[in-house]
Length: 382
Image 1 (cartoon, rainbow, N blue to C red):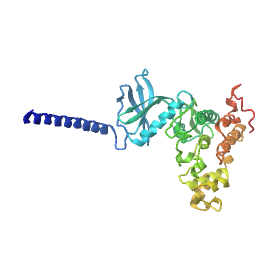
Image 2: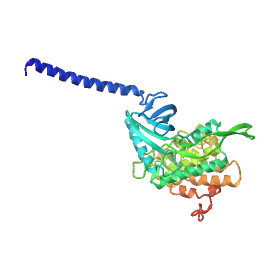
Image 3: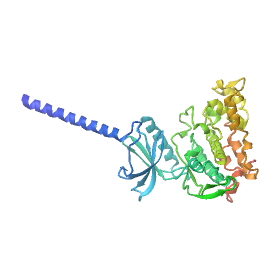
Image 4: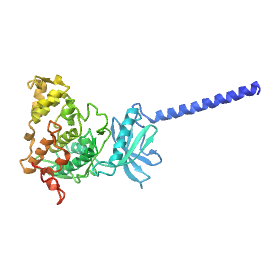
């Protein structure tokens, strides 16, 4: 082969490499053009993903990514919710864990949201779900934080306890229970005149709910992060770094049900020691055993919470919190049953806190029991 031919062949080889690199660079540029600076997928209404999911609207946004409403053209044009995870490693890994949990619970518990499908779209893990409606928090907010009626709380509470009990039976802890993660299947409402408040209030027509967001759900055998749960729903054993398991979910449910009943958060704070002071105002002194075992000794002095009730923070806690039973709206039997259940859910010691299987047998839920359905509950004393 002559020098001219060799030079021509080498030039052709270089041209081929340059073309491949150029195409790869174009692909990378196209991928980056799809994403915003913080990793969200850039999209607009009418965009179609995977030749199947046509984006209609944005339903919500979180640190994990966004949730969009789509038409699923492979499911007869059904409306679905599509969770689009950020194109970042830590969120992709969390999404994979969530998918694992969702596959475990798929179609086994009707009170948990159902995953329909999942796929990878240019680095974005996408999970499709049945389309639900407003969260119980958003409905409360749209209703000017007027509380839910006790009979509606009963039905919602039963479904929440069933769903989370199912997780616990499968060696899972949800770890992020809050009103935002409990969604109505249909949030249509009627306007009812509230004579006491002298205003119209929204009364949801159907209290069927679904539990969502399993991104932080943890199996018993998996690593347990030190801090879990959104602040207001965080159990004392988590604040005190005593370790946690399924009972921390029960504490969160107690806080949620109180919020449904009163319309405001039980522990409205963002500070650990203040949070503990609030819990003591509601439930009495922290048990000595928990104090002695806590890794957070800086919060205590001589076996008691180091707290000055005369300080600005102390006065705030005193104005915001009072013993649990003082929040009763009525002295009717069902209200007292409800508060008995709350007290058992907000028990300090995780080992003494009521289990959800026992909670479902509590007299508060008796009106929902059907003949033959309450077997196994008869020996419980309340």
